[in-house]
Length: 472
Image (cartoon, rainbow, N blue to C red):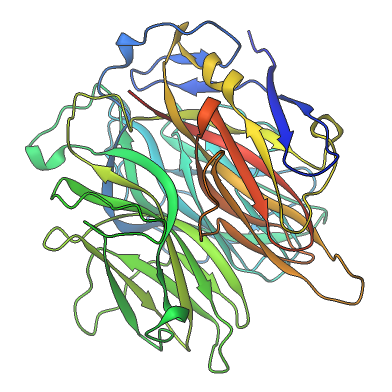
């Protein structure tokens, strides 16, 4: 039975009252293959979780491009309708791009979904075929003519496919869709053929900046690259990442700053390593001239030295990189870092709506969201999953408005554990007039509370949850 649960939005603003927030219940896919209803319940043991929810990175691979006349995917090429009727089409996932073909092995897949050449503004959602979806949730928001990517964690449907839904207000609009795969999460039933098949657990951290080319070194030029050492790195927050070879990957928020006089339309790619003279075959951040845009990346590190490389395709672009977590193979029997995906994204809160206050977040202001009831309600087959360290989902800045009528405004949102000092990092950058989405790992502070900070202007924002991260 689907029930509603209670979110609490507390304010750090003057004269702002506590606001209750009601969210739709969610159905969650368990690492052992069961399902659960998110509903308020006492904490119970979760011994049945097994060893699922581990991440297996892949070399980035394009598994679908609707512009292509010879796609590797069984889904037909050609522009896809994007209308008020919210038409859908299915894309195959299993057996492509390095994803196992056996549905009993694959819990969820990490994909970068890009909308390009849309003829009108709208949004895209994606979920396991047959799972159904909240009509409110979205993964990519786009304006006419834009190219917009976003990382997503999706669970294949019973047929091994992903359903993609496109919406605009136009009855005749179309858009092209591109899907790149970056890795997958295994079930507890997955059997490793060799030690190299072992998965890794995702350890969320307080976000911290590891690179900002504006602080030194200059922008990345055409075919320019910058290598960052991940293992043992010290972030601007003072946190130090583990230095051992067990750190096999990293979760990064990569922001492209394409505002140089020599900037042009370009894309950024993040890869474990790149041979001299080579160029990556996939992209992580697509940038128009003058644009500042982020995208989250989950990428393996170079096994030889624990580094990753950022590549710029054209022009000149600065890059800011924040670490949101890392992938580790230590203590494989532990729960911490195992990811439990939802069967479909669902809307956790939307500050535009009355039940969440319908009040925009102002300049230099922050507010807290309590996930305590949500954490206490997550069950697998009626058994509470236990402690959780973070929630993963899509954060969208929906509307940014000026503080002063004659002064254009741009801003950014930062999400971090409540009770911590605000880090020098950002989750998404936003300008007037266009919604901006980005996958965000919200690491919990005390009492499962997160804080959202807005730099400039007044912005509404929303969050669509897609997975939770377990803790010991």
